[in-house]
Length: 129
Image 1 (cartoon, rainbow, N blue to C red):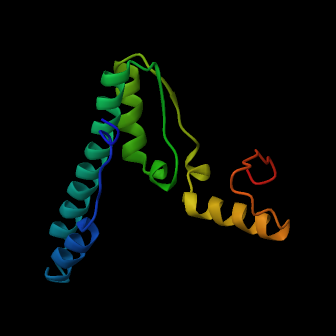
Image 2: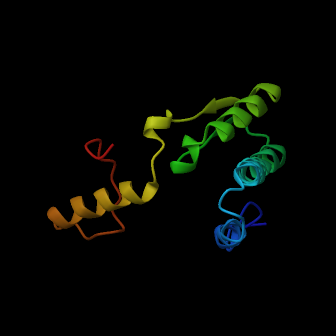
């Protein structure tokens, strides 16, 4: 279906914050265990979409982008998956794995400066990247 690969973490950060706020401030072991488990669950959730998409489409290359790709555990598991399935994988360096919102803001600012408000006319601009 059209939205077969959509997912949402709606409420997940709030639930995590509430859980951590109810812990004893000195309970560092539980906090560390929670953080590791939380990260692993999110990484597994993201990776499951890649696995499903590769299976459904038969693609031979995968990629990722945005701030989430700065996560070393996600990168590690994606690379393992790509190697196991003999896929090409294209990931930006962690330094270039930034929040896409920043890129959109720069593009919008550039359009405002140049008075280019035609959203139907999309062009590549190497200055932005």
